[in-house]
Length: 319
Figure (cartoon, one colour):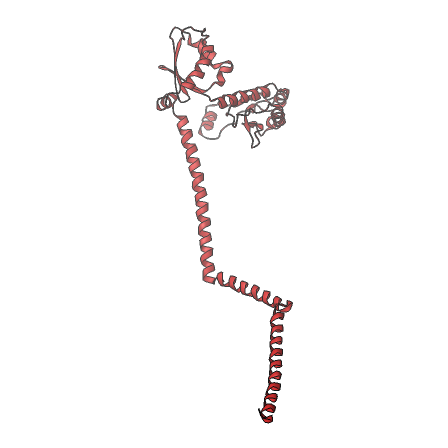
């Protein structure tokens, strides 16, 4: 190799080493930039971009309602509200209709309701136990009556040789009166509408409360102080908390006697025994309280009209 060729090769090698160094420096700077892309400013910018893109996506999924769409939504809500109110009214009317139908069915004669119901041996068994005491039937002796019950209504046929005044008085007296709700005496037999166990307990409890009122000393005091004659009817009922209340009604309820009686009723109710656990409602049974007032009776008022003119025309004239 000539000296000129050797010199040329050396110069090329020197230039190659310079370009290689520059290339290595460039690659190192690029690696640094790549490594620093995960720094805090860049990470914060990336999180903000993500939140912005999520909010934009939500706005895209839930488009803003136009005025027309808002009006349609209001109309639909109004229609739903009207439909709900109509459904509530329909339910109330259905409940009232069912109650009226039940009351109408209960107002039918006992013999008709007896014929329409199925026979109930369980009611017969409990009623026989009560009637055996009424007729004083000895164990093993023949009963002087026949009994058949349909639903809560029983048909009782008593032997003709028994005095009806005696056994009817026994049936309607004492604790026996709590066993049935109503009775109908017909030529073909007697019909008794028997109480359920709950109704019998409610009937007994109501009677005990009204008897407690009848013995209250404040009652007689109000009668003596009343200036007006008349009466009130008092019945017991349960409030929402199942506490007994005594309610008065009648001509004297809002007069001096009723005002005097109100605290007496409250005191009796507070002293009444606890309501039996199986009692939910009380039967409407009125205690009539008659009052003979101390004030003199008002003079009769002459009514204007033809009878008054006729009375004046027939009256003797004085000279």
